[in-house]
Length: 519
Image 1 (cartoon, rainbow, N blue to C red):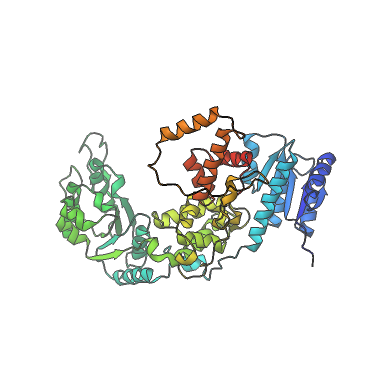
Image 2 (tube, rainbow, N blue to C red):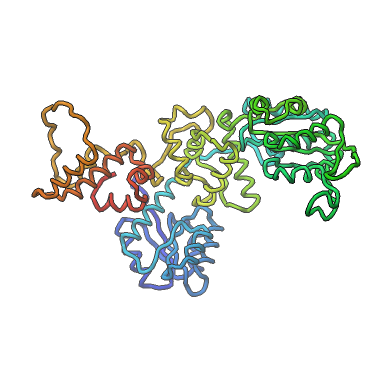
């Protein structure tokens, strides 16, 4: 059975443009059809969605942007390349804002058209072939905001349940970005104080000379600038719960007053003499090693024991990689509900990359990655190539998929859709011999080892060859050899190779083409 030809629809109200594009694209054995208006194109897409669409921005009747919006409402995965004669920043911004795959300037070179078509068709094939992680839960099942079913998170959930029945002081520890405030809010929500105030205070974000006033309030005239009485957070939170985040950064003088609140249940405003009784539950959190800062005498030992009645340690994301699929799903559902993205799914090969990343920034870093990837994704699925380059590089640095934890997405990568070259097709030995028909040099006789050349020695040698009669320009050969070797060392990874060579990835691509290197 013959393979189905890729289908491309050209939309332009200029018949000459339609004719020219049809001829160029047909030269690659694509099945090309054309439409002379936006209305005609929308009707055609409703009948049968093409693989790729070339769409003019400025047309009579329904304009290009409006046509694009109609097409994307019919098929969110439809890949559309916009054509324009006006290469302004506004054009580029609008094109990408409304979900275009790319845009091309008129007049355009045939090779540019073919390259864009090939890239778009490749992405189309990736979207069709990509497996998807299919979640079993809805956002309603994540109403606590703490997502995960790993053994480490089950212990956290148990501890939350155990401390909600009493007013015991709780210390939550863990790295930044692990979700300590979410745990504090969950404790509050399930406690008998749930209908009273909850106030979160970031102790590290308030200057030492203002934190006492912020927490305990002040009287009018108590210091310069205190033009009126102020009620502090503890007083406002009477009957409720106060969350002191990053308490390890609190000044010693303020720690003393926090200790008094915990021991006596009373406060005194700055500059005041009246003692005010408050009934406040304290939940504290820190990303520091409390025992160490107590030893260093930067944190009061008596306050440490008052706060550390029950400790809940939040695991790092590295310790619960099996939770990543659920967390990603929750984030995508949340973004969709907030109408911040049209992406609903993540391809399994992309999920595998996420499972390999070390996540130094924990869940907060993952959230950032998913949001960025969802914004640039073409269609409704995050692919491998949509992930940030640094995430893809970190995932590839560890070797094969054997390092991936068992789970729904533990499958081999499919990196062919990326700008980077897969390791399996890294630069071959022949990459340094791009000229067709050139014979590989036979290895010469073994020579004894010599001391390493200095950089000046190497430069002297190159300079000497520049003066010699050589059939091939020395500098060109030197550049070609150097680029080929770096590409081979980096297993075809253009991002890392361009960094080592001190040039942008775009420049490196141009030099690879100009020098005839094969990747």
